[in-house]
Picture (cartoon, rainbow, N blue to C red):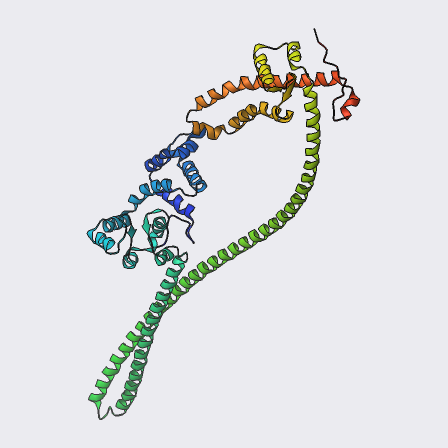
Length: 459
């Protein structure tokens, strides 16, 4: 069986789905939109309402969402359930067949699943009609009905319409050939009649020569000649009528032939344009591919250079971390804290900072991690807040409560502000200690001088 509900060769699923949406009445389309939360949200965003006057916009949003999710089965089944009962005679035939005892027996004989729906080739040929091609394409793409490969091929036959036109053209040519044969037969009969008339005329001449002796026979011959003349006139009139009919048929044939040629020429021109368009796309993509290869080569070269620079930077960072760790090991953090006038909230943050320091046996503060990692840990809450705000469109839906989502974020703003002030104070502390305790020339070395003064007390 041909696996439907998947991309079909020769069929645009988006076009078929759009046609199904157009066939569904407004109430059905509205129910479909309300059944799906994402579609309902997109259709009502910006204050829009689900109203019949906005149907065109809703159909476009519906189709765009279905294409984005690659035609989800649940949503497609919902639309198909509204569309299928509207298909009149085709729906009645299929429903009567699949609910019949005959089909139940067929399903049991072929060991088919209880939910399997198939048509034999004979039934398909009997019910398939080109005029219902759009309906059969929808059944092929979105229904639980399973088709054989031959049945699917016949549905996807894109040139079906042209095949019918050619068949009609051949039937018309056959009818014209039969008409030409009838005309030829009548022409033969007319030729025979003319020969007979000529014979009668010759007989009349002979009778006139013998009219003295055969006056009675002559009169009879004259009457026969008159009858033959009338018959000749009648045949001529009939011949003229046939010639007019033949002229009309010929004109009709020429017009039909011209129309068929025009259709074939238009189709050929369309196909030529499509080929040219695909050729342009191929050339464009080929050029873009070449440019991308060049960019990749440049990027790889830049990446190699960046890796070399990163190695150098990493060595510099390690050297700087060693210097900063030595510097921080000489700072009397408790004394520094007493010299700073802190608000109660900042004092809590500063105490948290001091608790993150590690004290050795000599009661000197040290840090368990490098300064940059300690600094990054203070920024994690900021990054999380910005990430939540940037992704609020999705997180609002996942949270299910828009007001609750933003209410939870409000508590983070005050903490972030305190963290920013804390880092500002920390920068000021490091700046003051660095330039009050060391000479500029000492910064050129990666070790702390042995003789180093404590920061002066202020106030």
